[in-house]
Length: 163
Ligand SMILES: Cc1cc2nc3c(=O)[nH]c(=O)nc-3n(C[C@H](O)[C@H](O)[C@H](O)COP(=O)(O)O)c2cc1C
Image (cartoon, rainbow, N blue to C red):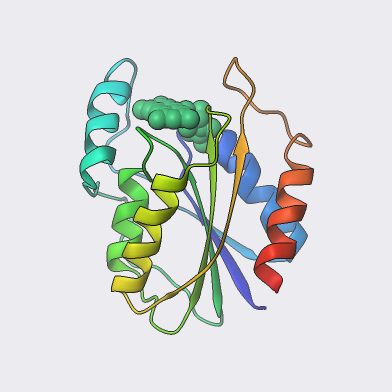
């Protein structure tokens, strides 16, 4: 598996997940940065609304170098039970044809984000990619994960996507 980890993170949890996964799979890592910074409290209202509707956001860079990678490991927070706008942009614009795309979410809920997996899988299929597996991590109540916390979830995820 030659993989690249692609992630968006607003408050840092998904960045920890992405870096843990990249280290464990020896992957290149690519951060999706939005052109306009999101601030409190608007991120909840505007961001949540955009996520529900599947809206894309403007990214600082909208060309993605996936060269050499047969697998994309896409890491996203859950917003309003959905993938985030930056990830929608990536899924719409990246060259996913023939590539496996595995998806890892961080979220606050204690249930697997099934709705979001379904949404991501549909977007991946629409671009000719193959859904390559799923994983998730529930962040602690105060909303901040610490490095090391995600090791078990990440290990299980990597085992699943390598099959
Ligand atoms: C705008 C917004 C909406 C959110 N909606 C949900 C949700 O519907 N379900 C959930 O479990 N967590 C939700 N969360 C919590 C995040 O998914 C969680 O804190 C995640 O780890 C944040 O990742 P980040 O630190 O990489 O930005 C929401 C957070 C934000 C900011």
